[in-house]
Image 1 (cartoon, rainbow, N blue to C red):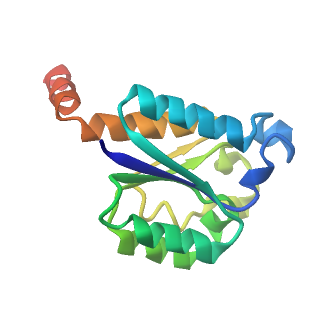
Image 2 (cartoon, helix red, strand yellow):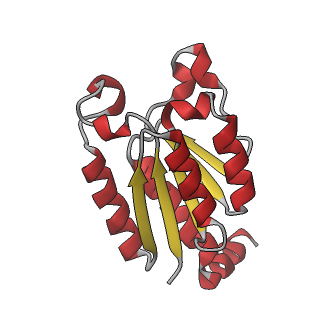
Length: 156
């Protein structure tokens, strides 16, 4: 069974409390449950983590190398500031999908730049917590040979 790693950065532990008009009322536990349900339905194993400490995030990314099939990451504010996380994602040599609950491009100008996007194969922003599910579903399509064949046949 393929494993996906879902990583969450600073302040995401405050989901449901912090700026619900921007991030909604779902808690991080709700998001984890949503992700676990999606992974189970798609026959994937899922590891779900959150930290407010950049070094811990980098350690988890390094440990993903050769161990997981993909990383879904919501780096929070590190999106816009962390060259170290950018470099760790490159070093991990694992496909990455960047997720943001809010549409960062409708927010403050400093949120419009992402160091993670330079590494990510895809970026989902503004889909709310459903963006996590979309990322997991995308990985499942890529990781399942039959799904790739069906997708190719549909396009032909």
